[in-house]
Amino acid sequence: MASTVRKMLVTYALPYANGPLHLGHMTGLIQADIWARFQKMQGHDCLFVCGADSHGTPIMIQAEKSGVTPEALTETIRTGHKEDLAGFQIGVDNYHTTHSPENKALCESIFLAHQKAGNILQKSIHQAYDPEKNMFLPDRLIRGICPRCSAEDQYGDGCEVCGAIYSPLDLKNPRSTLSGATPTQKESVHYFFKLTAFAEFLKKWTHEKGHLQAEVTHKLDEWFEAGLKEWDISRDAPYFGFLIPRETQKYFYCWLDAPIGYMASCKNFCDQHPEYSFDFYWKKDSTAELYHFIGKDIIYFHALFWPAVLAGAGYRTPTTIFTHGFLTINGQKMSKSRGTFILAKTFREHIRPEYLRYYLATRLASRIEDIDINFGDFEQRIHSDLVGKFVNIASRSAKFIHANFGGKLADSLSEPELFKSLATAGQPVSQKMDALEFSDAIRDIMALADQVNQYIDSQKPWVVIRDPERQQEAHGICSMGIQLFRQLMVYLKPILPDIAKNAEIFLNCEPLCWADSQKPLPGGHSISEFKPLAERIPKEQISMLKVKDGE
Ligand code: MSP
Ligand code: ZN
Image 1 (spheres, rainbow, N blue to C red):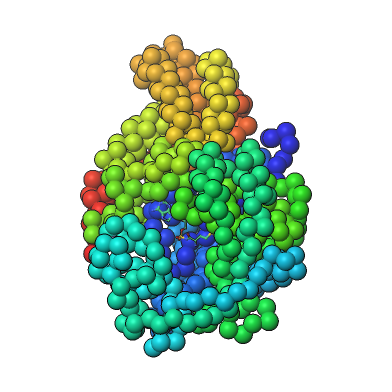
Image 2 (tube, rainbow, N blue to C red):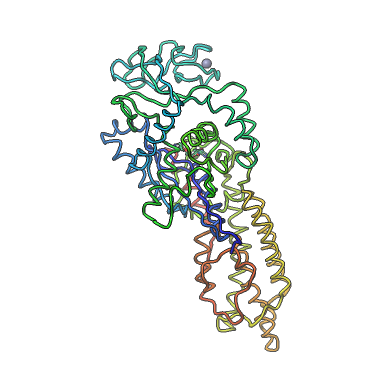
């Protein structure tokens, strides 16, 4: 047990409710989940919340196209997300939605607090407008000819051919992708969040130790240098979101209410679990720790806007924001045409999700590098590490314990020093897990597994067992195998929760926590029948995966 129980709240970025989860989403979710499970195993009180990001124009338009309400669309998609989360053993305590009464109330009160503090201003701006659809057009819904290189069919916010960044007003021959009409200009009053008022606070916050990875702090310095701007937090009707107080045609921009969705998901959980208190987590000067896991594309929203929104409304700020890189497959961006745009559901229908957890963990570190899945390497890692090294220890030992020793372990450890060395090795492993250096942690754990296999190989229990005089010795060796396997299982449990559950049944023990690696199972302990904990992946399963989403 940890000497002091820390109260921790972990979140993962809320996936948009306009589509199913894919392996890119899973990468970050798995990272956050492994970390949260690791903290729980240390005895800490770690709450993990997430939810669907349900608001915004794309969702509204998609619902319209499918002939359903945005509420119905987002609920159907959220249900699918939850199935994927369960399938990959992402142990979120709550998967809420930003379109919730809790979020509405929090958004309004946070907005009003900022308004009262003078952090909100209103000003009139000109924007592109679709005269046929009668709505303002977000940049992405306008296409036209690039003003710089004249490439055809470019988005309103930038050219994918020459990389120019511009305003949709600069596009030549612009048209609305909704109606095909030429956009007009229309004026409207918008609400702005005075980010500039938080410049000093943010410079200090982003440089305080522990809040951000160094690479992120550097990125933010560039943004500070370029100068902070006021942030447009309103959108005109029609929009799927929350109405701004005292307005009838203006909504909060979805990126204002999305991070508030973390609070809403927590609130929804606390309301159902009276032993947890929302205020305890979110009040100013809270002693709870708040960790946000996000991908590198949404740093701006989390590291600049979000701390300012929280602090200015009288709430606590995050303890740490952990940013991860993007997933690539066989070295390239996921792509529908290459058949590497893999949905979480497709993956889990073909391959045991735990294998993805393990493989990604071997690739994950604390730096914001992109993370590559190479299917050849994937197969090889699962077969050599999990099946060949780790599970093999249990299977080769269990066989004799059951056949020759009535399923009971020896009365004492025959190699206490070896047990102790694996116990001591738990300390650096736990430091690496805590520091999000999963790849390094796994390297250590697999080196320990090698050591255990070498021990068994050198002792040759399959030879010793044949000698009636040496039964006790054979019992000792095989019992050591089980005890050492259990220690390795402890270290791998945050990564492999399902295998751990089956191992606990096999070991006939309580759910393993980290401290269990320090003390052996008692002498004479009975173990249960051994069922294979991990098996080789049939070749065709991996190849099926690659073709499946190619359509
Ligand atoms: N809804 C916003 C987040 C709001 S948080 C208050 C959003 N949604 S998203 O669905 O586009 O992305 C959700 C998370 O998945 C983000 O952390 C994003 O970085 C991550 N990823 C989406 N595609 C990814 C990859 N291809 N690779 C790794 N992570 C990726 O942004
Ligand atoms: Zn261009």
